[in-house]
Length: 118
Image (cartoon, rainbow, N blue to C red; front, top):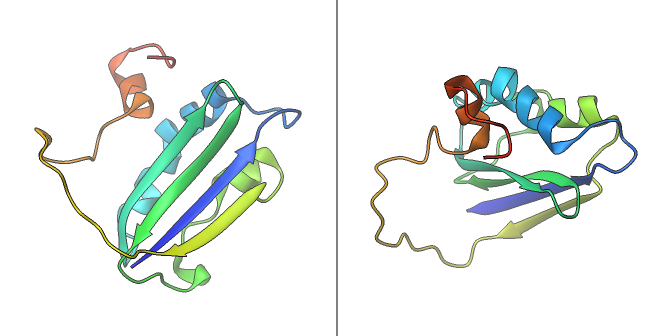
């Protein structure tokens, strides 16, 4: 398994966490649900440092041509400020009450009328 980590520093880009969250809600999530080999994708926001990014866990990462367009890079106007790839040495799943991770997070709350900073 592999992990990809990417993030952008949003300062001076014309984008904000709120604008990126709105984009994610409107069109960014669905494109990733059918990507072969993708186990999990987490979109990340750090409001204190004004950063936006993602972590992707792959059983096997497909070629770049199979991936959806990088809309974050298009909206922000630059490639990620930081991009790293790692081999997964071990993985565990702890005990938790969740049945699925799909549908969690503030981007999904937008359709339910919850403020974007919830």
